[in-house]
Length: 167
Image 1 (cartoon, rainbow, N blue to C red):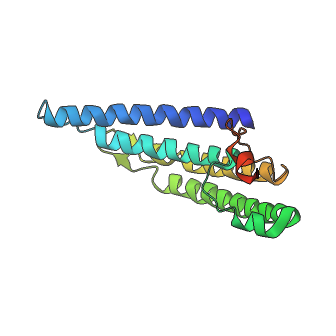
Image 2: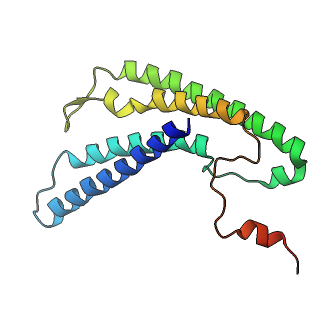
Image 3: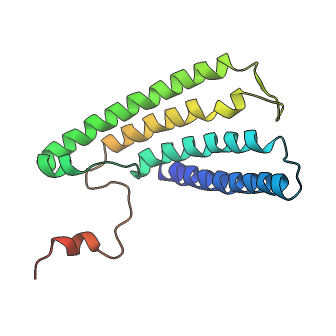
């Protein structure tokens, strides 16, 4: 699953770069050409929806979402393992909810058109069921990983090890 997550991060990064170029073109058109392109705002919005949802799914797998580790320290190793499993069950359930309701949203807006792009509105929301399902799968995968394996690379500076050492 690491392979899928890596590609989601790459796709999210590419989306951010393309969105930045589209917004840059919009600003150039508005202030330099005095003629803002009509398609840029909706294109930037569509790209942002796509890259944010795919990066969010990758964040579940890679563990780069914000969390507070205070409870991990207070509960000890066994308690932290139970807490992580409970959290991953909740994340999996939320992912499934996003997938189901996202699919319903796609069906509801299938006939709506984004006027400036000429695309069906479902194109903008297509990542909802996909990313929701991926979040659920990644959360289930995380339930079977050791608590110490948060998916992150080790700190190259070793700052966590140095913080606890006493001279």
